Figure: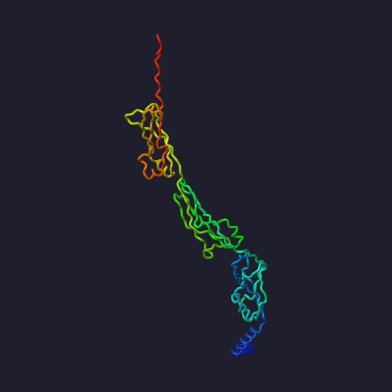
Length: 332
């Protein structure tokens, strides 16, 4: 038993350095003389666009390449070493997709065996450019006493570049929303245009950016009116004549916010009266009524309002005739 152990120990550890050297040489010889192998690598597809046409086909994002070489060379190779497959659409023809293997970087000592990718048909659309009308996206309701009277966009159109089918279908370009909720004055904002569909782009801006336009929203007060029954006040030393009215009608017109202010002023409309002597068209005389806004109405508010009528002439009816006494004018 002891002799067997001594023999095993000697077989393993006697001349250890020589044995390790032989093992390394044998391993290297095995690696470098091993049979060639075939491997598949997945690499990205890089596309160079054609400025004259828009591609309508969805292309595969990757390509699978089959390469052949020694085991040692293939074992050290990665997809990164191959770069990407190239597709130049400038010279591509409509029809089945065809990729040129020559566009792939082939490392030394490696043989190209084949390439596999999704089979698609290339379809193109000619590129056109046209000016498209811009539509402002106004949102919200202005203050109830005001109204939205118009919207202006500067510039009113923007040129769009892209495939004829996509660009030709554009009826208008929408802006980002402009909120006018509760507004009581004109609103002006600089806003961007909305994103376009794939295959179309704005001119005059960097790729991926959207143009900016100025949107002006015109807002003005609503015009309304107030009707008044204005009492007539006679001088203390003068009795109202027979048939004289107690009050006259008047209408105040103007912006609704101004009318709401005048609603809070008592006796905002006043009248002065003047008695006219009998004339040919008024045998019993007439009453001349001058209407106006009271001094309680501020001048700035007064400037926004109109009053109708400013003057009214009221013809008085004849006085009732005295009834004759019974038997008067009869003979005895």
